[in-house]
Figure 1 (tube, one colour):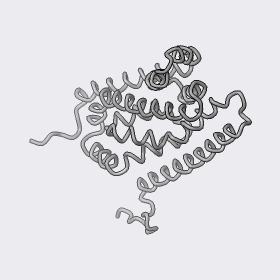
Figure 2 (figure 1 turned 90 degrees about the horizontal axis):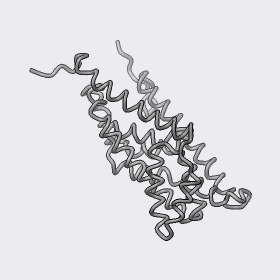
Figure 3 (figure 1 turned 180 degrees about the horizontal axis):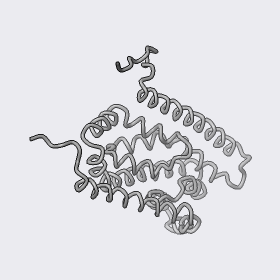
Figure 4 (figure 1 turned 120 degrees about the vertical axis):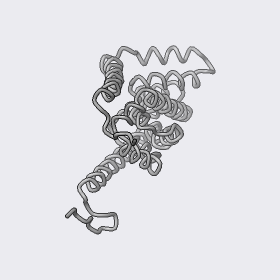
Length: 242
């Protein structure tokens, strides 16, 4: 006998409770770290600088862990610029960003993937798997360009939907490269933001913000068109039911 795709409430509520607790834990971390600011980035920089030649590798690991609990990425990237300068600092920031994406996606997968699939059902799960296979990498890249979205929170969500870790790593590296340079360069030039490096960083930030806003708008229009039976990519109208 085939399984009923609609799970009874007695089988759904444990998965719903698990996802609610997972989201509540993330929001609590976000409030404590990003709003209440219980972690002092300056103290972290001082502790890392005391490790000497190992400081870049130490900062990659420490910064990745802090970003995974929602310490703002721009602050961590700026700290990398202060400690290591614009060139090495950018690579340190990128290494930390990739590691954060993998950590958050892995935790999201372990905590929420099974429950998300049960609640979505087999049809929607299959659709999501198909979209991940076709566009997963570019979804991660595009998210990194959209301003105002927490990279860590997005990585948790990607993981909960089953995004492969290699897509998370490659997508985070490619999509975060411009902003990694921007915030690291601003940190390196904090004493003189009117320097050419500071102006370059601001220009790159403006360009990436425009690209991200355009990509988000286009993605939203495409999603809305597919949902409402809008025009096909070739310009032809979709057939309406009935």
